[in-house]
Length: 472
Image 1 (cartoon, one colour):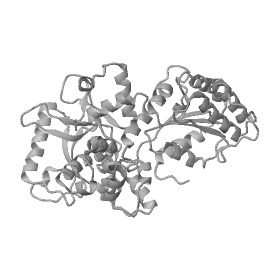
Image 2: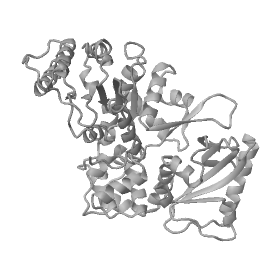
Image 3: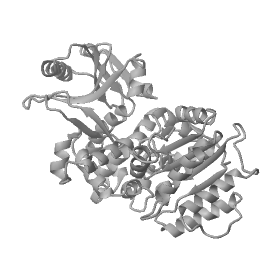
Image 4: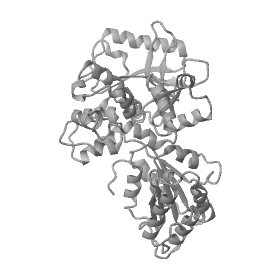
């Protein structure tokens, strides 16, 4: 099995395979994150039945493709099923055959339906037929494992996970495949012969996030800077138009999601729901709630509570590195040459902000470095309500053990140097936060920086130091 990282996900699949009861597993996650690869690798491409949906195919085309899979796995009927009920009837017949392929280790009959949202075409009976297949027969087969997967996350969430009909309380496992961590990225590059340093892996993450498919397009003969330019900035690059394709492949009404992302991305610290309504013109109702939930489920945004106002409401912040990078630099071809942009003043400004997002994607690693992995906590950013001489904090880890880590993220090529002005700024932030929020907890200033901290007469203001290498 050629799987890098994914320790938690592999354990979840193993638990599912060895449970001794019928299992209905839903696998979902953003485009290009490696969902199909993980399932196929785990089972070594040996399934009792495998079929995938056809992008933009109509019902007849979907049924034709499904028929070809049925024949491949032993169905002797050659005609295209007249509807999905007949298709699943024939699938049951294939699964009941004594010659059916079983998982070698567990003896299970494993069904893998990939890209199921594409199968559910307009006015088709796919969902009803899948519902009937599971509830009338498959759910009583102790050795059966049904895996459904799809990149169209909105369909998976709304039609399977949050379904109020036949699938309600029927899903036995949910597997949300998330982007690689920095550690998994480093493992990937090492296994494929790249010689990136940990600092370069962090730089890579600031553009591409932890998406394995993007790394698969890299040319190891080129530098990271050259790969960014060739893949993303160049109009002929394979990822130049990925931003547009990303949302259209995941969401049915992608224009709504793009509007929301564009508004949120313009504010570094995120925006509240009322701001989204005002700036997009989207009505404040179930449609907006669903779109925000879908963006959060895909990992494009995070939701955190408002700490500085008595008015109820959460903030929404874009935390997907590739989405942020594309929004800032690929829209309207704002940047045409990364090689010229590299190490410019604008580059250093972008790099500082991008590193903050990398840190937000690795909060669990930060907690581990602080020795508080087992301590329950909430995480959020903070911006003072004071307009003159106000302040903001990149990340607050609000711990149940009555401590708050006030986290500052700084990127520097060498050890970061705290001067007298920055020392005063940190003290001001902490004092203003204590005044406005009135926390009854200890406040520990924590610095997350790529190359560590240089000790001097001002550095004692920082209690905890986390280096870039500690995030791996």
